Length: 341
Image (cartoon, rainbow, N blue to C red; front, side, top):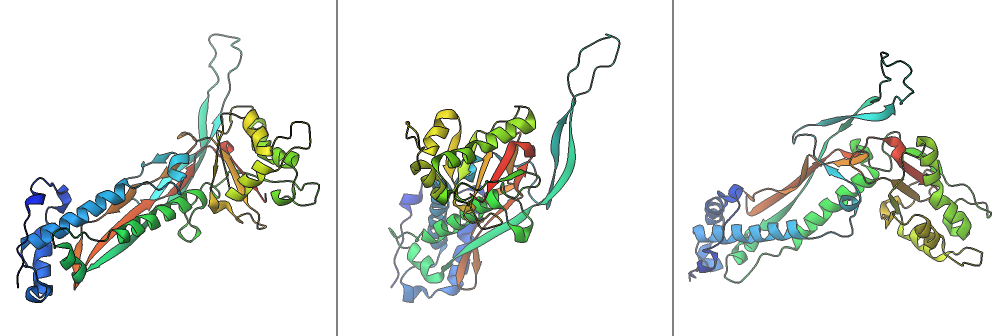
């Protein structure tokens, strides 16, 4: 028995330009693979149109979905300076040189102020994943009112966002990609031991934790004569909780984090779980930096992209990919990593 499929609900639908070949391509493939009489629907262009439209809807949902658990895109500048297809990205690790001086003779040459530094080359790596829909999924998708299950594509996008977030913060050592934590030449300090003989916050007092919270600001001010001041602090949720609960042993009774927010009201404080146990001796890490495109940037030649569906044997494969060079730190003195907290 055959079922006539009406397409009235698709009359105003516009597919994306690069999906134009999909309906006829899928219809031809499905016609080869499915027994129309047994599955109960007609093998014609309508099958491909409906299936393609279902994938289009899923693709739109995937792109529009928010991923609040992955914070790199909100806490660091994104950039796309390298063209898609490039395998390396070169940048200058900068250091400001020169000064203003008193003019003694108006005919003399003035001192030159410039930005100089060393050239650094990092790899641009490709990452990808796919979702497979069987002929039976395709058959169900052609029936009026039945949608493809989009959990597979959502899982694909979630995996991509998780990988990107990890690379942006801590890099990918196997691929030679750096994150903000391990970028070349960032300033690193180790939290000092507290009165309990341990540098980690689990044993420190409120005063000692507060000292660790403000140490990067004192350090950057000293190293740059006050020209650098972080506006973003990231640490693990466990360390945030500790700083929010351990109090000063004075009349104020403030927590270490409350005192920090009072003294540095313009600093954004967020949690990032990639820093758990990442320090050389197994402690957590904290990073203070300026969220400024002149200081840092995450290089993304090609963001998460879904390819048109590809018929393959008795299934259709939907591939997705992205490319990134990781996090670039242009001014190392603007980033301070505190380890072993």
